[in-house]
Image 1 (cartoon, rainbow, N blue to C red):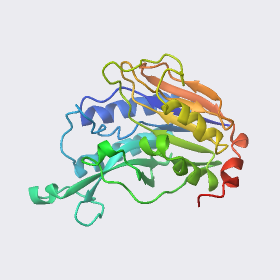
Image 2 (image 1 turned 60 degrees about the horizontal axis):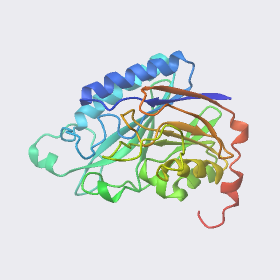
Image 3 (image 1 turned 90 degrees about the vertical axis):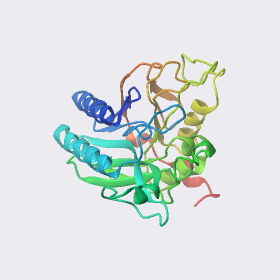
Amino acid sequence: MIRIALANIPFPATPDESITLTIAAIDEAARQGAAIVCFPECYVPGYRGPGKLAPPPDPAFLQQAWSIIAAMAANANIIVILGTERCVDGTTGAHSIGAHSDDAALSKTAVVASALVINSDGTIAGFQDKVQIDPSEEATYTPGSDRRLFQAGPLTFGIVICHEGWRYPETARWAARRGAQVVFHPHFHEAEPDSYRPTTFADPKNSFHEKAALCRAAENTCYFATVNYASPGSPTTSAVVRPDGTLQCYQPYGEAGVLIADIDLSTATGLLAERCRTVP
């Protein structure tokens, strides 16, 4: 058994607030005995969606934020999956580490939606970039190119980010076929005007998204842990789905909080993922 936490918390008003809210959620997850906590898509500095007044990409801010959050992870002795972004050179695709020195360099910056995995001792395990981006994101984010697995004691896990988890089943299957017992799914999903406002998970009247979460778990015999921002009328929420495709738990819609789930790794066999002959 391992205890996981999903940080279903509000959209940060500023990049600095994204750090403050992240630290508070890490502290709460650790207080409740979680071994790992996952945050929504691009939580630091905040998802660059329609109507979101985000400042320009800032590699120096990100480095500072990651360092602060890594120190908190070590202090709390907890693994952190941090939804974030990475700045890359838009002309070469190379990842930028330091701050940009001039406006010309900044103008060439491209942004990759990513998830940073921080070990419980504060060291960096690595990044999982978002490979499949939504068509609406093409003017904002640059797609990544590689997939990887992460290890945390007895737990092997993968990460699929928002759109790629909903619409591309092969992304979750890639991880499950290689031994992932849990696929974490950071996402961003806010209510649109006149949209349906669900109160129960996978409501038949709602969109396909939460049904897809049930499918990702059942079709791969693994846990699927999806985590969203807390927002009024949220069309999807944070939830954990068991390897048989049944719902284990979910966060009340729009309600901020840290969702806790104890998962039995022995049930996440990856059997159906392994039997699939149509993907690598």
